[in-house]
Image (cartoon, rainbow, N blue to C red; front, side, top):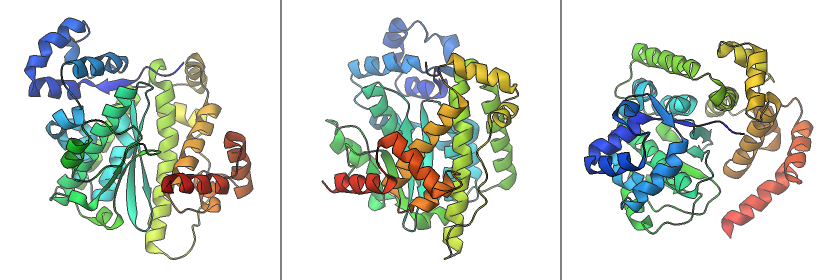
Length: 358
């Protein structure tokens, strides 16, 4: 059993404000979409599985095309305001990635940086093809809007965009809207920008406001600590650990030509995460078990996903990936990877590279 994902009702309110004529037919189909329900902070992500096909049947081809420009950075609540007030673009993107769960547990975001690019990777936690397609497109549209807000100009064709879904019939319009020719049917949903943009200072940078909104994001995450969200929140804390570790690596690479040196600190333990969520370790373990999961399986899954992501999108060597994933030895990582995929990390990378050139 997986988590019952949540998504902020603010986005649906924006859609209905932009096109109020959709309200009546939607409210007739969905008893959950009462006026009082829309005043709540979140709606059940399961509604999206039914809501999106309903919107499509009403002539909405893509929410990214139809409503993408309605979603401003401030529409994302404290995480949006924190990004606006961050010192620079890199910090803003890291903030969005770290606290995206405050707006939706369906989409998670991670950053990968090398000497040439910063890659914003969106993972959509849904098996519904339409939900996956629409949310990957709107997440990319939002990411582009964040970048343009801080860069203070149209970023145009200087970006590269990959989607993991097949090319839709409205691809030409989407390419035009996003300002670049997108590639479809790729391994991941990726928005790539030049690495130099990461240092661009935010015109609205304010340290006090930034820290205040980050504190609000942490408070929201704590309030989401229920049995229904336990898997997502443990994944979030593990992802935060690995993201911070990668950020430290990327910073070291920017400021030094030496190899990566770091203490092999371990990921947060179950008791440590439970303390952050203000519950006992036993309670958290029980909640995970009720959702058909465990701390050990989530840690393995997170390491697996990141290993594949870094092998596919970076030039990191196997030893550095092992360190980033907090393995004490590269051999231990290689053994684990073989158990997941029946091949070595090096073989996986060669196959991935061959597929991308096909």
